[in-house]
Image (cartoon, rainbow, N blue to C red):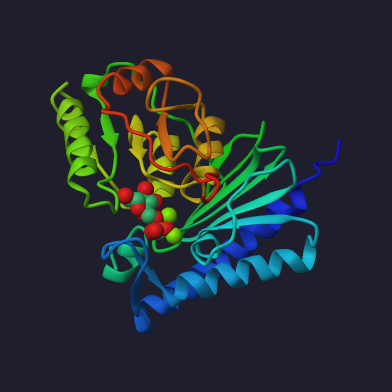
Amino acid sequence: MADLWQSAMDHAVAIARKAGETIREALLNDRKVTTKSSSVDLVTQTDQKVEKMIIQSVKERFPAHRFIGEESVAAGEASNLTTAPTWIIDPIDGTTNFVHAFPFVAVSIGFAVNSQVEFGVVYSCLEDKMYTARRGKGAFCNGEPLQVSDQTDVKQSIIATEFGSSRDPEVVENIFSSLRKILCIPVHGVRGAGTAAVNMCLVASGSVEAYYEIGIHVWDVAAGSLIVTEAGGVLMDVEGGEFDLMSRRVVAANNKTIAERIVKEIAAFQPERDDHSPQ
Ligand SMILES: O=P(O)(O)OC[C@@]1(O)O[C@H](CO)[C@@H](O)[C@@H]1O
Ligand SMILES: [Mg+2]
Ligand SMILES: [Mg+2]
């Protein structure tokens, strides 16, 4: 049976690669920074330019499709995931890394139908690594199949997480409480690429056993969520329930054993959901 969404996925790969070229050029000569929710939540003209380019290119080919884009939402658009074919876009995941030329900067494009991700594309453009996954057809990096780690002992694991962009003392305390408990299991190490999308691709690649974070957005994790599961991994909520794309909470792991062990140590809290209705 012809794959209904293959042409859309091919377009996503092509436009992610084009966006990566734009980002690499901008890295050399245009990293003017502004801020969003806080002084450490950065955005640049390149984030906005790349998102506009991706959305415009999709609209020309798929005019009925809908969008959830990080910078469109920042400009006031709603971020409600419906049953309609929806492109979930983070034009630059790792903007802080981009501003500092720290080498993990990704274009993340997820595609959902009936609120289920059908394909995911994450282009780590400074590494030139194109991660892709199509539901039921596996996950790949530059065309090579991906497989999660087979480790079941958390004490033989590397766990990825991030410090996020909140500097609220209570949130920071939660983050460090979870980090301290996980580090002292003990695990072999804790790492963070500075981008959720790349962290999830590292789980899919078998380089880290799990990644968790509270505070991410749907555009950070939509593409990576399918890349993880198509590489044989699992997704979970930070309190052990089902992963919810709009909840701003994620555990992505190589298997349920590791995921459940990490969940035990996370000091969970609930940020405002991505699909919250404004008062
Ligand atoms: O604003 P950006 O760059 O699109 O994304 C922000 C981000 O890089 O920051 C978090 C690190 O705490 C990551 O989870 C997330 O991917
Ligand atoms: Mg992001
Ligand atoms: Mg971004």
